[in-house]
Length: 232
Ligand SMILES: *Cc1c(COP(=O)(O)O)cnc(C)c1O
Image 1 (cartoon, rainbow, N blue to C red):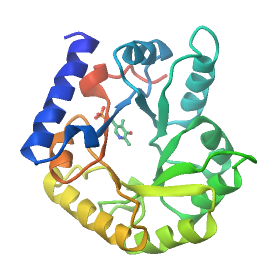
Image 2 (image 1 turned 90 degrees about the vertical axis):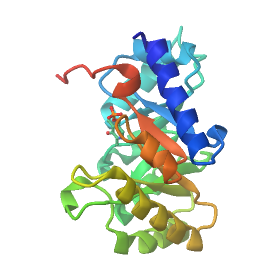
Image 3 (image 1 turned 60 degrees about the vertical axis):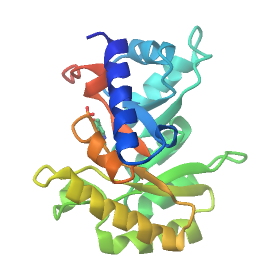
């Protein structure tokens, strides 16, 4: 299959899953995860109508966005989603390259991104990453820390706009049950931040389950891009 065919195939599966769940496909944002791929792939995706791309490493995000801003690419209108582990010392670089940060998992990274705002910057859309496993190394905040973190972002980070919650399904559990816990956590989050409605969940292997559980933002890589190049 060509890139265009893979994209169309995934979009058809998204639309089917949305209809099966009684949802409007227009309420679902499909982010194409382009990590490890060259900017030329992003240009091809843009020509196919893709508006949202995801990257998980700050250096790669910064480099691609800078290259894209140069002629002849400057008129690409794209939203860049940062979906990787965020380091506080990279907060300024992340803030200047990302339109949305999905991976807020501790007060310190929220504070660092907030302090990285330049005068006149628009608020930065952020999501809290929830760890759906018991393994603290997997990234994300444990469920019992979620609401305190949300309260911190709302009270102490005026340049961040808390939009919702993000998670990666565990490897050792059916995605539907993990995403059900994510949906519960989203409902809890909305008791204190009513408009934090986004649920970022679903990758190539589990996006239909994520849609059934209410995901609003899908992060789909290899099903659209093909296999990722090996990283050097
Ligand atoms: C790489 C990545 C994805 C996309 O994974 P695929 O299985 O290629 O769809 C989604 N979310 C995160 C956080 C990722 O790092």
